[in-house]
Length: 295
Image (cartoon, rainbow, N blue to C red; front, side):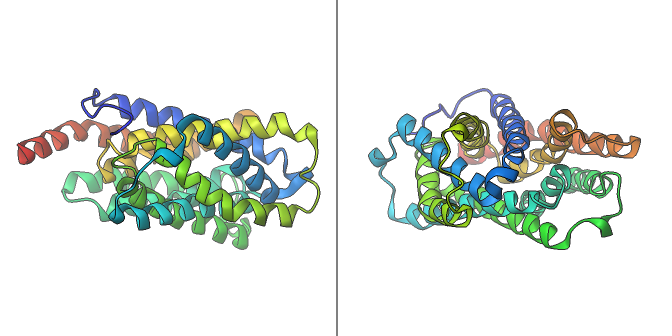
């Protein structure tokens, strides 16, 4: 059975998703502070290891039973989750947080675009794209952005798209508990890889408190909340709502990393927020149509 009732208020998954995005961007800023000590690969390993342990204790994934048709999506969900984390942190080594998240957002934006069925949905996608277009430079020419880091961020975006699509299929029966299983799959692959690339620098007790904070903010809390929203929002609505992510990343960078926004970048944020609000306003009508079709 799902962990959260299906008849929850329609606005609640939206609030849950906003909390998840705020948490994950705060965690990303904190994680970047560890790069000088253990590198992005080491941070990935630390985040996945501790985050998975927390999720396993909370949800006890060994109790879950997946149908045969859910097993392959679950495998791809776990692989996408781990790859998304790994590529994103590697991109942060040379690309500012706001730009990395904006590039990563091409994944859910593509999901929103290809999942659209009505003309009004394209309005919100166009607004989101316009906001991202102005947000990308972050006060500098795009040509000055490291191309390798940008490629890693785009790769993370592709994994994010797979995460959204497979997460809905794999998590339909088990809700947020699916995240624990997916994170376990990701940890089996990417924790050894990160430990190997970080050499022995991870073996420091002083890293444990920061590592736990990153694990909670970036993995355990947001992915659990995202699964609640992911299984209760239409795919295109979930994808378009994710347009808030670059704006939240820019704000997090301003608060914790000293990045400052120009007037144009604030206008870009407003475009992104308008796209998210617009998709939310059209969600009720969309859900009602689905309910009529079912009944």
